[in-house]
Image (cartoon, rainbow, N blue to C red; front, side):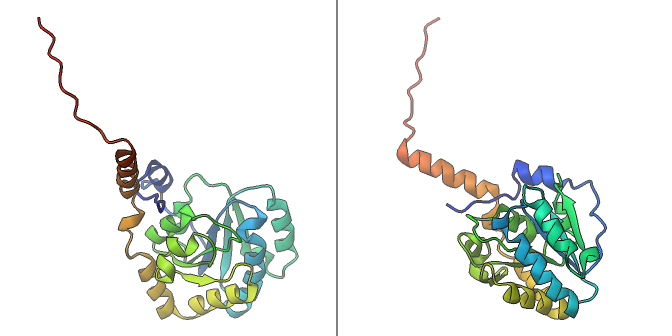
Length: 213
């Protein structure tokens, strides 16, 4: 059973529709992920070094927290583009970043599904993500986002650069990410879960017992 987040309590809390988007320097590349090695943050920073050469105005925003954050910050400081790599920390409303993001990246080495992908799709981001585990399924087998091999810095950088260097192509992938979102609704998960319980434990009609007055 595929997961889904849209219109769930998680979505309503994070969306915070009354709050304005954050102000980002564009074109903006964003990831929302725990700061763990398995999330591919080190590879994303290395890829951004290459992207920054071909797209001089690009900025990278890393939204999230975790034990490996100091290591990633040290890596970023060693680059020539440290002033264009922004560690935003844990954000209670990350959708405020997604709404103004050009390219959303999830460069995970392992990822059961990636709940944030449906949120990035709803925010109409162009998406680049690892072709691993449940990510392709979350992106409609590559129809809603560009898939790259996990850990492949050059392919990741080239794919991001191609999108940011071609406004027409970028718009195409923003539109594609926003299609076919019905299955990402939490209502589908609700109905499918109930169907499983119903199959395992059919609900029998109970006869009403009338208690005499």
